[in-house]
Length: 254
Image (cartoon, rainbow, N blue to C red; front, side):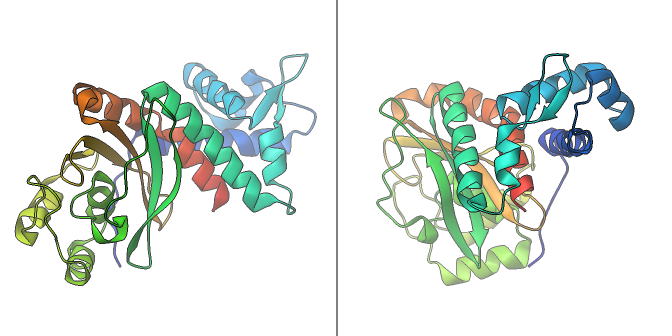
């Protein structure tokens, strides 16, 4: 199955962050910010922002003399024992913080073996999760998550999915014509979030942005009660800008 992929800012941030982590890991006694800049070739302002993110995620720590060393989160991931749980815990921590910063329930989804799968999510009393009244595997045509994942496949991959899953009408806003859906997916710019404006469920709006890591198709999504629909685009933009820590977690897992 061929994928459609275009580099965006979060991907560049992750590539740079991985270079920083590799450099820190090579200097067991610590490496200063000036040395990191020299070794990685990353400009001072950008490097400062990356180090701030890496410290927040627990991947690096700053010791007494100001040098940087490997953080606890990265050390746990480097241990064979409990690695899988550490990866999930680290990603959940990132999602929880993202939920709080955008003020919405957030989700990570992947397209695996021809099906939509929700890997992890973060919700709370003020940020309720979507009521999955129709299995997400069978409703990709109506959800922001599904459209984002299908949008990353090539035309044949999209056709294959729609041939296996009937486009049922879930609300009065649901697209049920495959030609209309395929046309919209083809014309959607890769940097623009996919939206669900009560197409899956009345009372809920959603947005999703791609977070493809390697050959794996994935997306980061959020949902809001319809009374907060006025915040959807702003929240979606914030989600897109904040995708780098999630992408980094996925890149470290792979």
